[in-house]
Amino acid sequence: MFLMLVIPLIGIAQSVSSRYSGRMTQDGMCYFFRKMKLSEKEGVKDFYYDMTYLDWTDSITVNFSIIADKPETPKMLTIISGDTTFVCDNLKCLFVDVLKKGYEIRMSSSFSEKAIRKMIETSSTPIFQVKFKDNVTAAYSKSSWKKDSKMLQMIFQMIDVVK
Image (cartoon, rainbow, N blue to C red; front, side, top):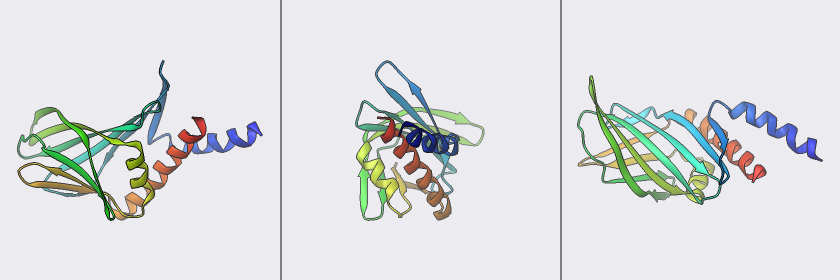
C-alpha cells in the first residue's frame, strides 16, 4: 500500500519541481511557488507573482512585482476568476526600486487557501487587478493558464497527501 502511494508522488514531485519547492520548518512544511511572469498586461511593463504556503495556516502569501513607469503605491489588489472576485487581505508595498527604465514595485498580500484553490480549479483565466490611480491588469495567456493551473493543482494534490 505504501509503495502505491509513494511512487505516484515521486512522479508528481519530479514533474512540478520547476514550479515549487518545499522545506520543513519547526512548525510544519513551507511551500514556495516560484515566480511566474504574466504575459497579458495593461498599464505596466511587466508583472510577476510568487506564492508561499505554510501548511499550518489557512492563508497563502502572494507577492507581486510590477515594473511600471511611475513609482506609485498600490491601493487595492483583486484577482478575478470567472464570476468570482477575490479581494486580498493586508496588501503591503514592500519596496519601490528605481530601475534603468522605470520602477519595480514589490507588494505582498494574502489570500485564503480556499480562495487560491478555487481560483486554480476553474477553467477561467484569472485576471490580477491592482488599483493605483489607474487600474493595472495582468493575466496569463489561455495556454499558459491551462498548463500552470494543471501544475498548481498537482502541487496541491501532493500537499494534501503529505498533510
